[in-house]
Image (tube, rainbow, N blue to C red; front, side, top):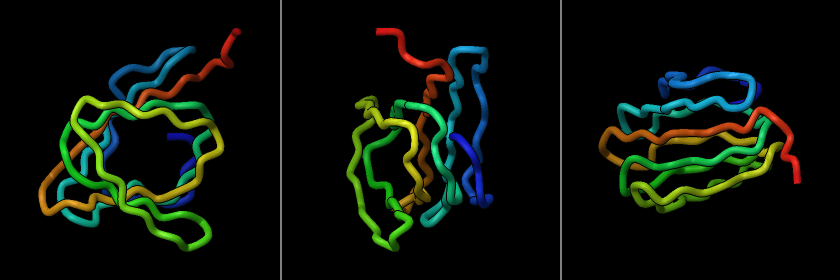
Length: 105
């Protein structure tokens, strides 16, 4: 998940890590659990393992609630800075896939 500035309450478990890719499962036990503030050093894909909401805090102080569906991935580019919080009254998790190499077009 890139450079961490602050520890959150969510638990990250690295499932795969090699020179090209890092795959981490992020588990949020309860409403409000967070990843902690961080900036993504690499492009990445998130694959939700639940239907529900994540709350995203941005550096400018804005908050947004995103609705996600289990198994429906989304892509983000390097440089994203945020804190991600569980916006649900149940435990949830997602898999984050970071691309540790620059793309070769």
